[in-house]
Length: 334
Image (tube, rainbow, N blue to C red):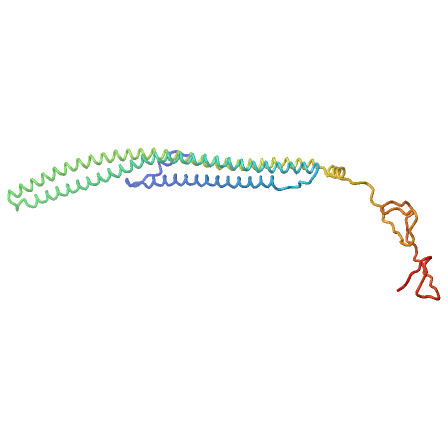
């Protein structure tokens, strides 16, 4: 980077102008404002991270997630909940880190503000002294110029009255001319003294202006470097947070890889099994022809399973059509 950029480029041909200096001050003030904006950004991001971390923590600790699972999947889910808890804690920790970075930015900004204020006080004094001396010099110059005009008028009056005015009047004109010449000489000396003083004041102001430019340029280089590094650090912290989260989630993936479907199925069967024999078919039992040695309901009957026979043909009595006989039973038809 080229050096001495400020002290070579912020001058004005007008001795009373402070435009260049004002531009530098405005730029420095804007720079501190930008730092304050990033500081507020960090604080707001910290609040977001903290809220997210706390919400995630509440979710992890209060919301059930497969709480009735067993064996390997249960262990994987426990790892999952723990790692979500860890991620939440890491975001809360990140919020604290961001607030610390915001505090550092604030300290840097205030430090630069104090440094700038010291230089500004010196420059304000130099500007006031230069302006005051310039005003005095210009007032003395006006007086000197007026004395010169008075002397010129006195000389012209003497020349005009050479052949007209009497000797006594001429003597008065010569006295006035002599007095005006003395006044010119005196005012000239005073004017020269003020010019010399103004030049010394100008040189002092110019020297202070150069020093201020060097101080302000150094400050601005430090500010840009600090700001750049602060943003760089911030995005590194965010990247590190992502890596940390991924590491924690990787533990969940590893735990899920250890989850065995077969083992979990076997575990459930061993823990909750109720028997290996299914229920037997329910037998038909004729109300009128109870079978001998019929198996109780729900019990196996071997190979001789009861089958429903063909419907019996009723026998009608010729003398009584309202009755019919089935073996030894009578059925009444209504």
